[in-house]
Length: 433
Ligand code: PXG
Image (cartoon, rainbow, N blue to C red; front, side, top):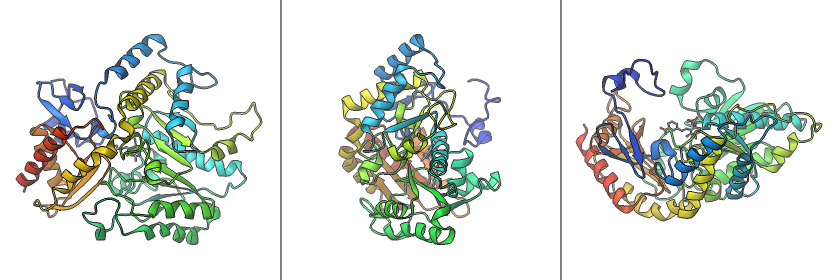
């Protein structure tokens, strides 16, 4: 066991963890192994990212070969072939019209980049009064200042002051009339009209963009009510507001189509991705932009930098190599639509938990499930955390957020894995107080 002192761990109860550490030493396919050799089934794809399963040989080899060929190339005013090739391949699977790709290194950077694109777009078109950004309650858009500001998770916001000025939030879409819905929930399309309320309050001429997760992941798998996203799109169009989909979790096959925009038939103006883009193997993110958004920046004189933004590691060669090999793997194995096939056995097993003690709701779509437990009196999150620990001890890795157990397995999952996940989860839920 290494000394645990120096590492200040992210989003972790550091003292609790260090008192009782859980280390992972190796991974392959659907599994992790602990340092003492215990095998654990990964029901979360790492952290919603290892969509093709762990340590896939093609991706491993691509990274190894690229490290020897070209370790780094400066991205500003220089290029390397893989970045252009990868952007083209991404555009080819993106929702129609979103064919410009800006590279970042994480979901958080993608979100802050998209917000800056939205502001720059309106300014470039002479509508510089459009500076307001609209997020949604219970939204998660990463941890940078822009994403924290438009995010709607109080715990992630309250310690950090006033955040960005001029931000407002739509109401969230969780509606208790929809408990245990199968498929998209029936109630709540009208929650999109909240955007009309904000337009009436602030005036459309002050609003740059609205950002939402098509399916909210981090706050416990909140599905869009039937018709909600269409309505949001229509209201944005009516008022000249850009619509941003944060597809960091929903992108790359999680819902049974390459992107949620395609699954739901609603196309945003900007789309943020990360995670499954490189199968989690090398950090990378991107913003997809509609031609009209990109082209608005291109009116500047040709020798001028059109968008004064970018990262040292934008389009990093190792990330591009990993990403290209990831897309090859997804294509060869049909993984970007496999969640559609597996949704029936997976969702069916999840809904089979209804009736167990503490289970107050089950929400699933594609290969995502949220199983919400009643909180223990005065101890929010404690019951789900106990379920997580119990599953980990019994060889299944699940994730919890509040009192919701969230499952997002690698898209290569087979029925036997599904059976193991839900058997272990059932026992864990039965065993906790
Ligand atoms: N947007 C969304 C929708 C996300 O889910 C981010 C942005 C930020 O991505 P980076 O790469 O900067 O972490 C995310 C990240 C959880 C959990 O428990 C989810 C995320 C991160 C940590 C935990 O559900 N998603």
